[in-house]
Length: 241
Figure 1 (tube, rainbow, N blue to C red):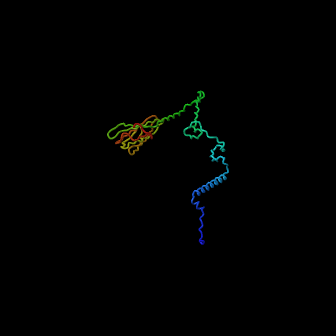
Figure 2: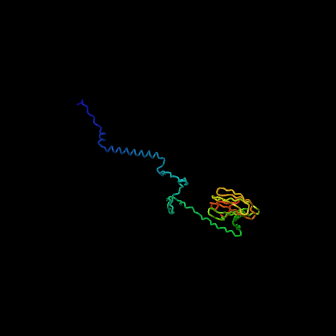
Figure 3: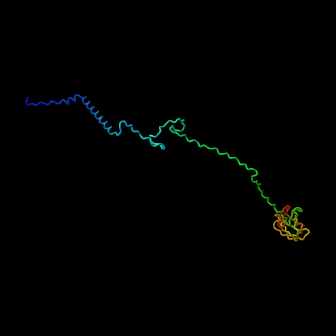
């Protein structure tokens, strides 16, 4: 027996801790309390302000036209005026009103006395046009007529009248548009010259007509109309047809 070793006895400390778990829990709780106290002390040591200082306030936005110092800003007060529709409750001004139109001054008519008025002039009428000059009667004129009618022909006459104060010669030109001239003559005077053309003839006097007198030129036509198409004495149209 003396030669055998004795086994060492186990330590009772770890065994006691393992067999008592409440001891571990109490130790952990103590450690947590210590750590919390240390953290609070460190936080207070970092704060520059005392515990009795008021909490910091956030800066308010400044309104244009308002004082910059926040301490001088008067507190907002509730307005006792009625709320006008269309305005915000925070608005303090009145809505823009319609422009006031002042009545235009009445213009009194100016009465001008009759004595001061300029005399009115009647509108001038345009003078009447001058009367046309009297038509001068041609010196020699003619008048046509039918003296006698018969089967196949007739006898016509051109009376030549001299309205001037001197003796005048004359020329008759007459046109019927057809027919045949048988003869022509001047009664009681020398005969003149005759020149025929298609449908008519021209007679030039052989003697002048005295002033204020008349001479008949007569002619015999066959198969011709009794009304001539044209008749002139010295270029002046005959009358009577």
